Image 1 (cartoon, helix red, strand yellow):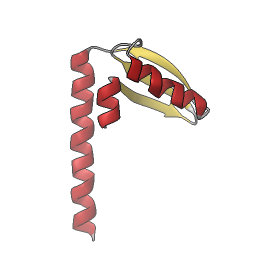
Image 2: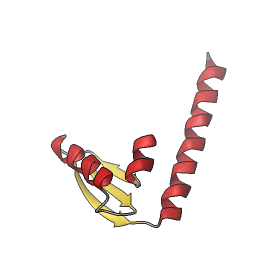
Image 3: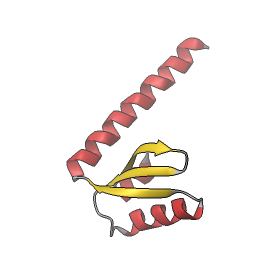
Length: 77
């Protein structure tokens, strides 16, 4: 999640190795670094521009979902 926040990107759709990724700024050096890494791993993607507020909201939702998963794992042990 830290990487997504630094790169200001959120993958939101995946079929096989095809991704749709929301990005705040496609020219951000960290964003470019992540996208190049995905290409090197054989992924293809389409970029969608997103506002900073939209990226922040998506990161919050993801963080909440991960917290819930942690609680669920502990409860199931």
